[in-house]
Length: 285
Image (tube, rainbow, N blue to C red; front, side, top):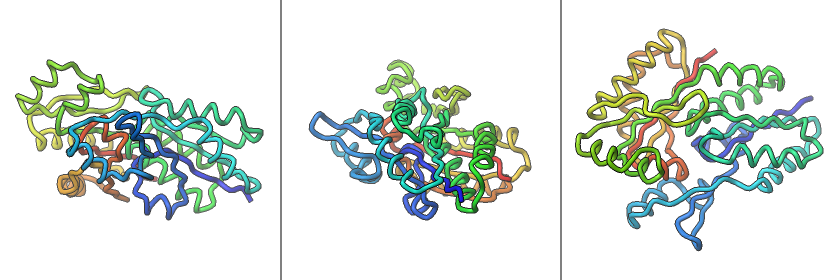
């Protein structure tokens, strides 16, 4: 019988317990504070510790993707079982070299035809919401063809919107200019960020204040999904209380089939900063 293994990376921000329950393999990216201080996202550096380090040191670290060798090791271990197919889904190639590293790893394996590497063109739980559904299908015994068909639907039907608490991280990572960051902070502007079809971050709209930004996102989601049943994921960077408020607002407006509140990990957190809240939505079957 065909065995389907689902692989992703740590930027999917899937809660550890959920990943373990569904048998999802997570390859960690790296967080680098200095030449002598590097950590594996979610493995040797948990999200809470990351945000505490950033606050204590007043330093925004850099990040790096896994090596092809790391992917090769993961794939080889999963392929030890006969009749295994791997579906490996990763952060947008416009944001990281992770997808490229996974692709290089596959080329060195004899069983390359059994591994399907996918550029999600997404980040954070907008990847996770897709991966979790595919892992559930795999657990239910669906075939690789059925799972890949559903994957294509999800890639078309999943949206994400971010609200950042400060523009400092975006500016330091080259997403916006210094003048825009300063002006936005002074005016308490909350940019609503999303991802293009190609997987690049862009400013969808701007709102003055978090509540106005949230209400605008809900309006846009109503236009996109209407009364259709949906899956929802709220990911946050040390902003759990507001994440819960956002979920409560969504429950008033939508037919929600499943919900997850999760913490934004160190790699995505290094680019968006503490206080960020992201809303990921996909159509439910």
